[in-house]
Image 1 (cartoon, rainbow, N blue to C red):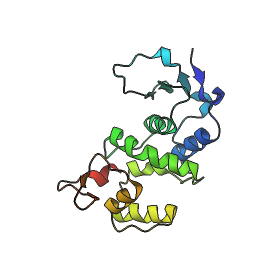
Image 2: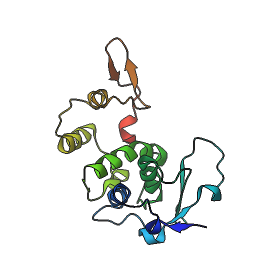
Image 3: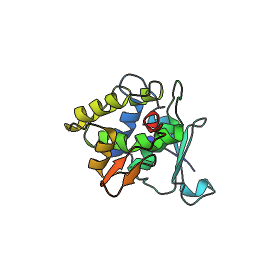
Length: 178
């Protein structure tokens, strides 16, 4: 039997902050936690072992393979559940890329006005680097330099073993998915 998100014992501290980051301060993107159902792991059958969560916008409901869910999985599914005016990029790619950033912001208590507006207005590389500098206090000359620093090689990039750095593929469309 589904439980409301607001009644889940694990929905506190970091999870509430993640909800707040996705929901936004100026535009409520999500239903209130008292209106979101959380389905038990046994209530939904998924076709693949690598599926860790699902969002059902019409219910609204969330399902997670593990309770409590990993914070990044929770953020990812909230992004799917959120109302968006338009999607100029693949929502799955966007949720995949944005979930880690949402959790990072929640952990350091930064609550943006409306982080999901990036759906309507994909940022330029310069805007992304300015935001990283503002939040982290570190200046990077390129998105590749940032990924080198964090130790992350995103799916759209390649790693140059000789130069020991992330390099941009020639047919990059990656920034539109950030």
